[in-house]
Image 1 (cartoon, rainbow, N blue to C red):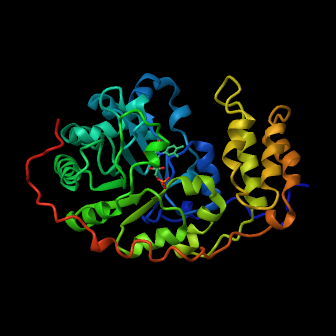
Image 2: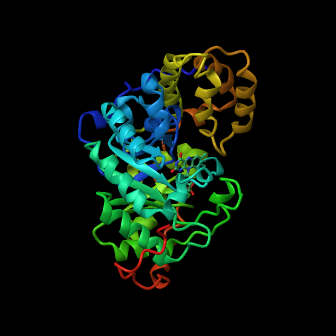
Length: 386
Ligand SMILES: Cc1cc2nc3c(=O)[nH]c(=O)nc-3n(C[C@H](O)[C@H](O)[C@H](O)COP(=O)(O)O)c2cc1C
């Protein structure tokens, strides 16, 4: 089977011709390759880099492209920084300025012991709102783009609604931060894995909607457990300002991302097929092979984002097995795809993106307003402040 298709459209990006829409979907923080694939499938969702430690940028100033470069098609794109050293965060923001990100975000939600256990980094920053406020002011002073915070709803037993509000209140009064992305479950720092920290603490969407109620001058994006485009629209219908989709976009990119432009942003479908997306991705992949030195990125790095593209389709398991076997001998993304895509039927490869999301999740947030915590009274003592 050939990847070539005579009806393939030119690689074009409407965002280059018009200013980016400031609309409400963010995607899983991810590497350059995944974002390249995501942007081929959705033209409008905001993309989000995986967390880059401020110290990495400060210490790798001669090698910044490796961490910060992205193709212009990826706009709108948010750079996520990690760290707690105010000076280094300020320097990192300044260093990133030349790359033209659309927003800079500080990670206050990562529970990984690799970051949270080492001083104040990731979610443990939620215990230091004053420091976060100072850090956000320093970042904002070194960039011209908006600054935002991604956080959880609490940490360990610091999990009351008032404590969450104290964090938001303090950070937003001490800095120009006006937008928070809220993963609506708390983090447990007692040794559970990052994956379990995305599963075990229960989701409390009522905290998120109470923030929307209690801080009318701020913007909040909801995150956690939004697994379909119909759930995205259900969250928006109940008053969410924005939605971040994480694992669903990664686990099932075609069904999830493919519907975003039409079903959320209300623009016509690109009509692209997976064959056409793969043709464009192959051109990208083969052009960046080995460009970071030491053979990286290699074919495996570049094909990894594609492995869920045929989620639950005929031939999916066979294609993954063939791709896995082909990593050893294939020297290019093109040859690997040529070799492995024989497993996927033409009708799957050549079907355009389906425009309408599955129904069933329309009322998932309908009762949330009946269980909101009591309104927050701003100005109370800052309990979270360490
Ligand atoms: C593999 C993986 C990597 C992640 N990396 C980051 C990251 O770098 N920064 C961040 O803020 N969140 C990161 N997250 C968390 C997601 O952004 C999101 O908050 C979480 O998965 C919950 O959303 P979901 O239920 O839609 O997946 C990561 C999640 C996964 C599964």
